Image 1: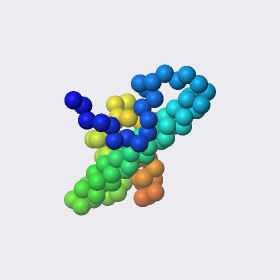
Image 2: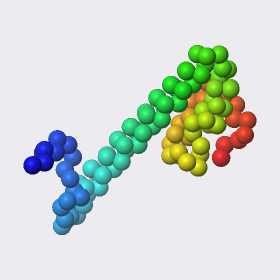
Image 3: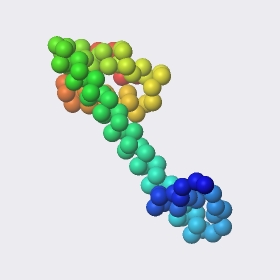
Image 4: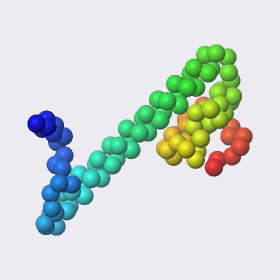
Length: 104
């Protein structure tokens, strides 16, 4: 027997939306779930980028070289989710990194 869902957001994927009010409630819940997932992915991307940067700088790399290395070794724009690339560019620019190749 499956465990009951502990999510406080009703599961509108499994019920028919028969009224306008049903749709409005689903729409609000769906948008909240999307925003929460986007925030979670952004936080994860920040954690990964800063963790990599810290480890490289700890071993003597400059911020410029460490940031360049992140894009060269870890995050390839065509292969990773766009949020990882966007978040890393934003964070690294705040730390003084200059994008030598230009944003793609």
